Image (cartoon, rainbow, N blue to C red; front, side, top):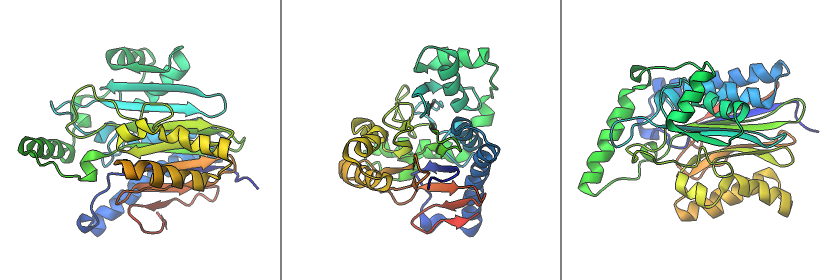
Length: 315
């Protein structure tokens, strides 16, 4: 029996180390996951579409400075911020994506504007920003997007690169937000947004705005939003591969996700994870990294969240 509706989200696979997770910081992260879950739940509970639900959830995640998207985006090697996002409607495969933008408060809304206001799939840089202005989307200045945590991470990464001894801290390597949903009509949708990789070269684009790699939705199979080492997710076409395994091999969502995350990505330096939902409302949230900020919510309205390997808890 299909679920009435379902929503899952992630705040990135670059989680804080468990040893550095104080009770106060832990509570802050769980609250920052619960708020976007409830934003998406309100849409679905009112009979809204999966597309509107993932948009609402990702907007709320972009507004949370703890996560690497929108307000909490990382800095490039030149001290700038360049943001990417994409959205996909599983009912008809409409998509919109943006890359390398700065200024719009919510990059996911710019991606949706590409989908709804243009005949294109992807727009970049100043062209995408001009579209956002013509659509009347809100913009913010550099002070809104600046966070001391991200600035220090960029400086630390550059210092390590100069010494030729960059560590593999997942907080600097990864960071993305995303959401997937199934609405009461059985439609699926996915949305993903990111600031990219700390101290990345200007112009670098990862998997988040690449349809089929970091984001995918198709009513007959699943909706996927990924987070992790973007170059590997692109090379293994991670999100679409899960859908393909379901459609062509007859695998269930959980098995298809587990295969891609653990057998395709992990052996090839593809650390990270994803959130997924299928046509029946089944949710999967696998990851092969130390942790993944994640959560889910259903018709009962209880927001369940987790950070590392612990069981989901009510938040």
